[in-house]
Image (cartoon, rainbow, N blue to C red; front, side):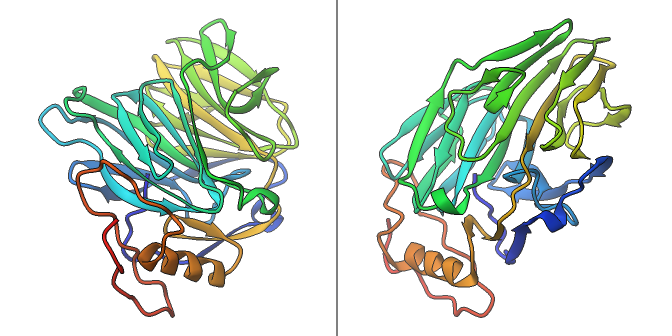
Length: 321
C-alpha cells in the first residue's frame, strides 16, 4: 500500500533513542488518511512520539468497509525501496501486481510479503467482482543496511504456522513466536502474529524480553495487560516482557508486532526508506524519470507521481509507465 500523502515529510526513525527499555502501556491514537475513492485508513505508525516498533516502521489499519457497491481499494502503481510490505486481511481480497510480473490475489489470513530492496513498484486493488467487506492491515518492515539493496522479490504464503492455547490462536505472519516460524523471509529478529481470541478467553503469550512490542486491535473488545484496546488503536508495550496477559470481552482480533530495537537511523519519506536525504532524492528522481523501479503491467490507470520533496524542485514524470 502506498503512502498517498501529498505533503509527505522526511522522518528520521530508528536508533535506540526512541526505544523504551522497560515495560510500558502507551496507547497510540491513529491518524485518519484517505486512500483512493472509498478506503480510509487509520495510520498508527509512524506516530507522534513513536516512529518504529522493532523493524516495523509503518502500520495502517482499514475497515471493515462495506464496498459492495464501491470500487474498494484502488492504489495505482507506486514505488518502494529499502523496506518490505506485509499485506494482511481479515475480510475481502486484494489483487497485487508488481514490476517483477507477480500477479496474486491475497485473501484473509494469507501472507503477501513484498521485499522492495533496491527498487520495485506495485499496485493494489480490489478484484472485480469483489467481496462486500474489506478489512485488513498494511505494514512495512525497514530493511537493515546490509540488506536494503537486496534484489526485489515477492512471496505469497497461504499456509502459516500457529500457536494455540484455550481460546487463543496465534498465527505467525513473520518471524518466530513460541517456537513457530513463518515461511516469510525476515532480515531482522522480528515477530508479527495474528491473535484470534474467543469471547471470555484469558491467556498469557510468551514474549522475548529483548524485543520491543506493540499490539494493534483489529476487531472486538479485548484487554492487553489490563488495558482496553479498541479496534483501530495500538498499545505500545516497550521492552523487558517475558509474557503478555490477554483477555477478551468478546470474540476479538489483534495483531502482535515486535522485534529487536532497530539500532540504525533511517530516513523515511513517502514510500522510500533510505539513510540520507540524498538517497531519497535520488529515488524520487529515478521514479519520476528513470527505469530503476520498472513498470507494472495490466493496471488500468496511470502511476502515482511523487510528491514534492522539501528542498528539491518538483519535475513532471518523464513518461507514462
